[in-house]
Length: 226
Image 1 (spheres, rainbow, N blue to C red):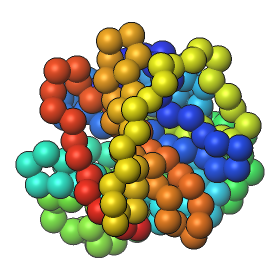
Image 2: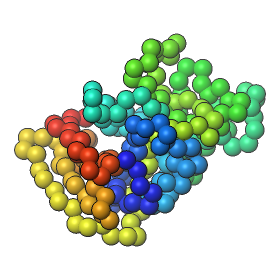
Image 3: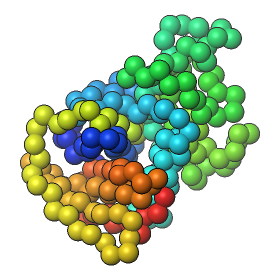
Image 4: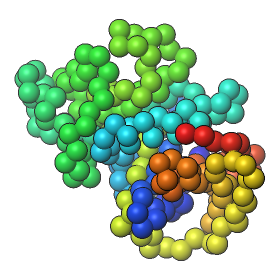
């Protein structure tokens, strides 16, 4: 589901776009630094979240991908928050977390009793839909600090001002009558991808791309409503 260097998710002049890199095979998941490098190689950054609205947007995208049998399942996602300095036992530890893209956003969405600090300097967004709820409720979408060498999925963000340096072939677009999205199949260097263009969220045009293994059937998301 992931090919390093492929530029398949581009923002428009006003809105960012997001790429969920989810790996069914655990051996394909990556460390924080690997995820960060993958996003930056494609002209993006590891996800930073500016406010609750953006958090809810990402949650909605993940919910639409969680389909029995064909969609994503358990597997946390790296986001671009990490701790600077030591502060392992300091009460100020939560204040030491900063966004790797330089964002000054103070928005946080920690799970109950997180961050636990210690040797856990990097941050994931929980995505454990089959896990039993904990003290803070389901392990879904709230944040947890983790060791940076752990292997997870990740989410990239592409800001409006970032433009691709390498062109892709002109995509083939199909409109879905009565739906709230367009599907876009992009082919580049023999690799195939499916993009879902969200168009009815607070009148903003947002897009979301998912890399698919060549030769496998495309995932199809019908009547996506956020």
